[in-house]
Length: 277
Image 1: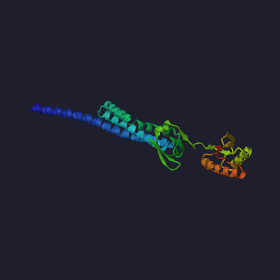
Image 2: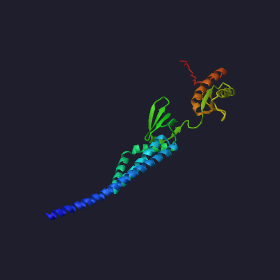
Image 3: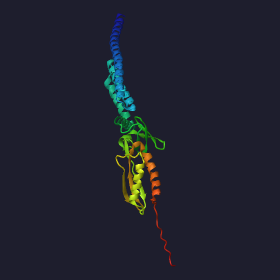
Image 4: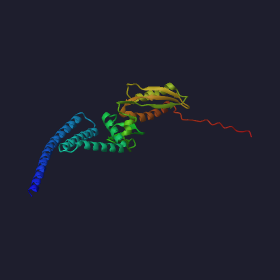
C-alpha cells in the first residue's frame, strides 16, 4: 500500500514539475505574444503613415500593409509555438510544402498577381488614364491585384488580367501634355496644290486649340490613284485631340467647297467594245 502511495506521489510530483515548467513557458509565451502584437501594430501603423505621406497608389498601399501585417504575425506565431515547445522546423516545412502546392495549382493567378504588383509599383498607367492594350482602347477604371478594369469609348466594361498587361504592349494615349493629330486630305489632280495648302493652313490658323509651337506640318504625302494627298499634323493639348480631329475634317470640307477645291473619290472608266458581228 505504501509503495502504491509513493508511486502516486512520485507521478504527481513529476506532473507538477512538468505543469510548472509548461506553465512558465506558457506565461512567458503569452507575454511575448502581447508585446509582439503591440509592436506589430505600431510598425504596421508607421508603414501605413509613411505610404500615405509618399502618396502610394491606394490599392498597392492597402496590399503592402496587409502583407506586412500577415508576415509579422506569422513570425510571431512561430515564435510563440517555439516557446511552448512545438517543433517549429516541421511546422515551417509543412507550410513550405503547402505553399509550393498552392503555387503550382495557381500559376496563372500568381502571374496575374505578380503583374498587378508590377503595375501598381512602377505605374505605367493609373486610374483615369486612357490606354490601348490587348486590342482595347478605353479609360482605366480600377487597377486590382489580379485584374485591371477598363471602360471602352462606347461604354463597355473590359476586365484584363494583369499578367497580360505587365508582359504585353500598353499604349498610354494621353499621359503627355500635348499630342500630334495626324490627318490626311486629298484633292483632285486638276486642283491647285498651292491654293489647297493655303486653305489647309488657314483652317489650322482659325482653330485656337491648335498650338503655335510646334508649328503645323502640311506636306504633299502621296500621288494616289485618284488624288493628291496632303498630310496635316497640328499639335494640340491632349484633351483637345478628338475635338480638333473631328472639327478639322468638317472645317476642311467646308473650306474646300468655298475655294472650289474638289475632294475626289475613286472612279473607274469602263470601255465598251461593240462587236461587228
